[in-house]
Each structure stands twice: as C-alpha cells, then as structure tokens.
Image (cartoon, rainbow, N blue to C red):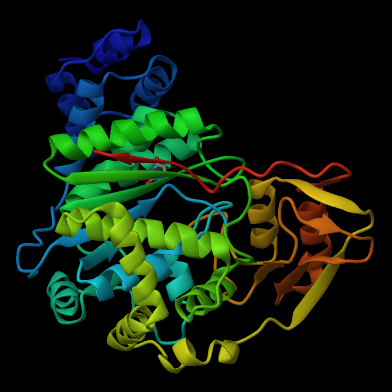
Length: 434
Ligand code: URA
C-alpha cells in the first residue's frame, strides 16, 4: 500500500477502505509517513469529506493508537459530558458535581484552553493547590469514593489525535466535520465512559457557525459512539454570546460556585441542568424532564455544591473557596467599559470576546504560554439588553496593565449596539437522543 495512492484516491473524492485508513494512522504514528503526505490527506478529507464508515474507522483506529481506559473497577454507571468549546463555558464545573450527587459516576478527562476558548483544567487549577494529574488507580478510587473526578489525560491516550491535531492546527485543516468528530470521539471512547452527553455549540464563538452544521456534527459523533457501544445524547446549544456573565478562569469558577449556590445566571443553570439531566437519564433510564427536575433539586438542596467541595478537597485544592469565592485572588488592574451610545445590544461576536479575554492573560496562544488565572471579563450587558450612554458594558480584569487598551478595543469591536430590540434565540436549539 502506498500513501501517495491513498492521497490521490481521497483527492478525487473516493471512499477509503478500512485498511487504507489503518495504514495511514498506524504508519503516520510510527513516523513512516511524513507530515507533508499526512497534511495532503487531511486537506483532501477537508475538501471531499468522509462517509460515516470512513469516519467511524478513522475514530476507532485513533482510539486504538494508545492506551484505552478500562473503567470496570468503577462501581456504577459511568458518565461523561463533552462540550465542543466556547467562551464562558463553565458548565462542566456545575454539571459534573450535580450528576455525581445524583448518582452518576463522573469520570471526566478535560483539556486546557487554546485560542479563544477556555479549558476546564485551567479553570480548576485557578483553585490554589488543585491537582488535576493523577494515576489511573487514584482516578478510579476517587470516582468510586465520591462519584467524581475531573483530571487531565491519564496515561497515553490517543497519541494519533495529539499528532494529527497539531498538524491540523498548522495546515488550516481543523475545520472538517469528520476530522473534528474523530478527534473528539476517539478521546471520549478511549476514556471509557459508557454514557456520553455532548454539548455541540453553534454560533460566533463556536467551531460550527450554524445550527445545521452543529446538528450534522452531533449526528456523526452520536453514530460513532453508538457503533462503539456507548449511549449517546447531544444538546445543540448557542454560542452566539458567552455563557453566563464571567469569562476567565477563576471568574468562571466563581460563577459556577454561585450557580451551585442557587445564585447563578439563568442560561448557565438551564444548560447545566439539561446536561446533568441527560447524564442521569442515560445512566438510569429515567425520562428526561424528570431527570432535569431532579438536577435542579440537587442544586437547590446544596448536594451538588457539597460534591464540588468534596472533589476540590480530594484533589488537594483549597476547598474553603467553594464556600468563600470572594477569597479568590483578584487582578490588580481593572477597567470599566462604558456605553457611548444608547439602544440594545444586538450582537456579540463571541470569538472576539474570547480573544479580548486572552489579551488580558486568561488564555494562551500556544500550549506553553502561562495563564493569569484571575484575568478575564465580567459582562454586564448581553444580547437583547437595553443600554444607556454611560452604562457599564463590561469590566476587564488583568495583571498586565498594558493589555487593557487592546482588550477594550477588541471587546468594543465585538459588540453591536443598535436602536431596534433584537429577537433573542433560545439557548438550546435541540436535544438529539441516540
Ligand atoms: N476539539 C477536539 O478535541 N478536536 C477537534 O478537532 C476540535 C475540537
């Protein structure tokens, strides 16, 4: 078999066989196929797509490229939730403890933020002392004991994805549904949970810009998961504006704690109870509406917040902050952004807002960049809200005073204020059950 022929076959739009896909992944991982040829195939896939069979084969081969976690020592139904990424998306910090308090075994592997989107690990590590790296044994012991662990990848999972993702990032080939679906699903399958709930975002802050594209991506991932024997559900949710009011690591943890204390923003509560409800409903075969109500009750009773405190303690973080979020370290420099015209916020370029937060130090451009945990943005006016001249639109927080002007420019250029009140789309477009 020759890589050249495989590239040529995909370039003219033909379907690759399972053997050809396995040849590509295995030989590329062992260093026998150069980046130039791998990039050419990725570009051909971007342009011509893949069938469901090809995408599934690609995913399963990537899954098998490294260790596969065996969660059978965990006693009870294992559940995971994955978001395709967004700005201000701190749902994992609310959903995971809520689902755990409801009885799901949440064995969650999360990533760091890159570019305009945040990552759960960075948010958790803004809690002083918090450890998100642990051995497989410790991971399972913690899940068995308190029903919940959120960690970075343990062991050597899906090295093929690590290699391919880096190449896609350099070759403008990230934006392909089969490549995104196989990248996400190979990691989720290797991480071992039986019940997987996906939050597939659409809009200005998401990979998928339209609802239709998000539905298509979700359907591909559901199909792959089902073929691999997992119970799959997906929520299609809007990223046309940041979720909640806070963007930035410790600011997002604070907002998640407020939500678990019954005092969070409505959109975050709605999405979080939907996702926790779906995890429960998948684990215990309960009708979704009942499960969602139970999720809400679990938050109202304080049981979900208790579970977060237990997790922070188990992972050696300062659990006092769960009860006293006002004690998080704050940024030295702040800047209030005020409205210079009256009207309504009619549009938010969510990616631009994420980038403004990165400029302040909350995110990273490359994986080696350091993160300022206390940096970020508090958003006071979101889409649909009326504004008067002089109203506070947002507050910027940073340790780097010099970044304030750039971040303010970026924030303001991401906002549209017009006279006419806009029609606001619902946060949740659809729920797809596999
Ligand atoms: N997240 C991933 O893990 N992979 C992608 O390709 C896109 C988003």
